[in-house]
Length: 97
Image (cartoon, rainbow, N blue to C red; front, side, top):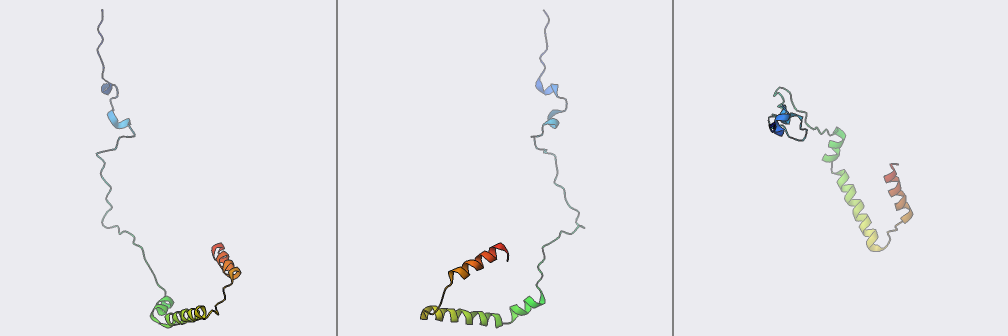
């Protein structure tokens, strides 16, 4: 009677875990960018017109005047609300007109 030698599973594949796509490569090192290469950063540019608008208080005073005017109309009962016009403005805004 002949005897057969047992062969382990690990000896069948001489490459080991190289063929296993699910095993993480533990020897991999993160790639480091050279220090000479600068990373791009986000930029924010404000136009000179926008800067002027921020500095001038005209917009704030006009806005606060309009708010006070509307408050007074609501308090006195003279404020008229047009639902059709309001709905049309919403529709125009959301449709990009």
